Length: 189
Image 1 (cartoon, helix red, strand yellow):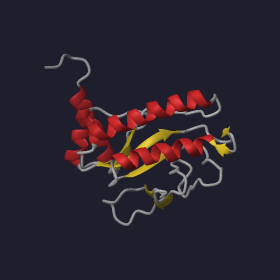
Image 2 (tube, rainbow, N blue to C red; image 1 turned 135 degrees about the horizontal axis):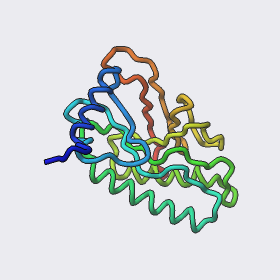
Image 3 (tube, helix red, strand yellow; image 1 turned 60 degrees about the vertical axis):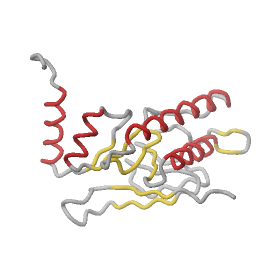
Image 4 (tube, helix red, strand yellow; image 1 turned 90 degrees about the horizontal axis):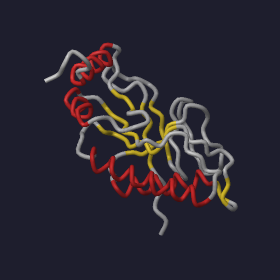
């Protein structure tokens, strides 16, 4: 029963109708995981979801202890998100961060962001080997050696040695307008 105020089910249905009306068939749960109801509706309606943890604007120049704490928090968030949403057929990719500010942050002789995301992406891979992993960047891609960026400025898939392919063409009206698929580097022996 709902009062005269906000009815979440109606709002979700209206958003879904709007997305379909503009021809969209995928979206990223930007900055935070969406509700169970939103995920169930995406499954029902056939949307493709890039599911994201709430890791926005990460910094890596505030000391080793802060970076280690942040990594532990992000790993926990990734584990919780994958445990919650791994059985949703709509989820096609896990997004481990949004707009990280890692350019130039060094830890010893290594790029701190590169080390952070290498470990976080490997953690996500260990949780779910079937789906891709990514990170969004609204500005520019990190420029440190080892980063790979082959997508538009709106979406950057990153990771040490990660191979990414941007499918920005739309072969049919039912295919995604833009989808980045990423394959992480092979595990070190």
